[in-house]
Length: 328
Image (cartoon, rainbow, N blue to C red; front, side, top):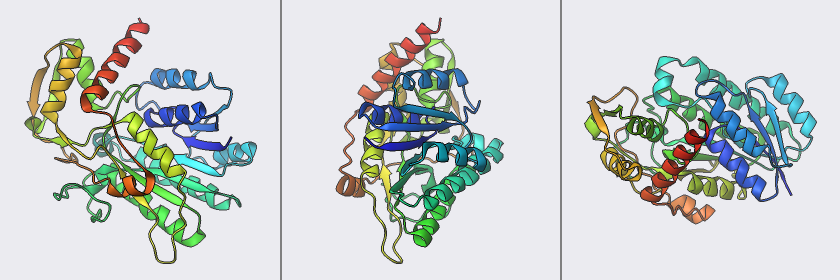
């Protein structure tokens, strides 16, 4: 039984990672500030499920608050493994209001890095980066060896900064850190600002959906269970880089890509209703296409995404209907 800190534990990915660890009988310490960027009620519902496990210890705190993190860290005594998923998410929102991204993604990550490096027996820090870091790169699939120094959203810029911050700490303090570039994660308990959530709600309510760039976009949609498998596999593979080596960073995606219009078609079939489409131009900060090269994750982590888009979307729709029906 290992004690593992999961930051952002009430968030979409953090909830699923914490739940998977608890089901393996680990002790999970969860940090989350319960930020109202989207429904706190949804976050409370996730926490309610996690709180049923006796090995779950939750702290409502902001990881950018050094004193609060220090207090919780000392209370838990032996936090030697950390999965940092707390972050201000959203490409488009980062253009409207960049300040929460500075607080959470930069200051918050600095606090976590500091706590890890000062823990004498620290074993491994795994943190989430993003496929958005590839910016307007047109060479598909995206591989970890490609340049990522031209982000086209402030959100992506903060995640690029996270990778550079992690590299400096890995080099200076010689403890294992692993970065994971996540590709368009979707599934049950997802965030309301995500396209699948917005589309499902609109279609069920006979409302139009906004389809940007006239639907001429494609994404490497990756189901949450596959992402969780990759995160947990990475946690078990700590690597201390040799001098002048970079800390390991892996793509976690589904290795294929689906057009936005195909995604909508599959969603329509799962719901059993046609969408009313409102075609719009490309939005600032959006990437036209993403596709992951996951060879490194397959080789080094045993990463093996299995969920088809039809299965994944069907699972999401079933959850959505069940969750919102139970709220009535």
